[in-house]
Amino acid sequence: MKPTKTLHDLGQSLWLDNITRELLNSGTLKRYIDDLSVTGLTSNPTIFDNAIKSSAMYDEDISRAGSSATSAEDLFFPLALADLARAAELFKPIFARTDGVDGWVSLEVSPLLAHDTDSTLAAALDLHKRAGKPNLFIKIPGTAEGLPAIEAAIFAGVPVNVTLLFSSEQYVAAAEAYLRGVERRIAAGLNPAVASVASLFISRWDVAVSGKVPAELTNRLGIAVGQRAYKAYLELLASPRFQRAANAGARAQRLLWASTGTKDPKASDTLYVQALAAPFTVDTMPEGTLKAFADHGEVGRALAPDGGDCETVLASFAKAGIDIAALASRLQDEGAASFVKSWHDLMARIESKRVAIRKAS
Picture: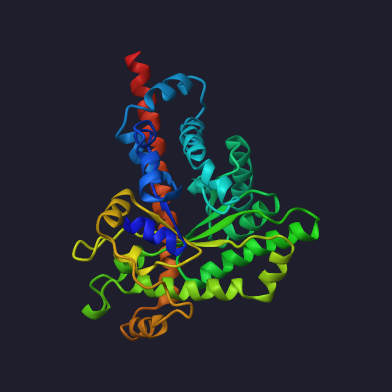
């Protein structure tokens, strides 16, 4: 049995953190679904920038819409929605079989809106309507300004993938925003079964403290933060507040591990996947990490529900001078800024392609 199947059977959903037309056209994504137990997919501006940069498969669509589109953003979202709609169809049998628990794809609102609540909500509503796919999440950042938009989007019935979460505190804030939206639906007599995941970023923690802590703490911070968040996740699911909502028909907002590709070339290329095996969670993996885990990954014991040794490990980091709360805030700000940069790169890429195609025609 492939390690990916073993991990899936443990109760964790394996999603691919990538999308390109080559993946779709070549049948590779379908093969990942059939052979590697992949049950969902995530995307972000960097992924689309790389896809459009390295392929001519988007040129025809850019050429066709180039004269009528008023901006690069007007060109981008139809391209992204076309790809994600195809992926959503591939995952549709999984979505149906799991009654909407799994089989999702994700599209992010413009990162330029990360600190603009009203515009984020308006964009989420618009993209969800345009997509017309029941198994498409709209990604909204879990920033302070994003939390009210998450609550409002859930109340409006829009499935949300909360992105850019880095700590258990940020996760809990996002989970509470989701619950408020659900509770408002219950109070309004609406169906509260609106799906959501909360994406906790892992590897960036270890990148941030690389070379700044004792050797024995190398590549241990991201996992410890994940353990602490997993404990908070299970505590929330066991809380009377969530159970009241569940009794009215609400669904759990599943915890998702993001940024699980190993950045340290000296470490195992399946480090985070193996360490964060846990039932009723999602791990969205870069393509290289997915293939590496399928080839030589190992599935050991699942995460301890009580967080295991995370508090001891986190105390060691504090002793080494790492302020976990301050670093979480910094990582979220830097993550938002990096997505803005990727967005600008993506818009410039599309605009340059539009100009080049126009000159060549």
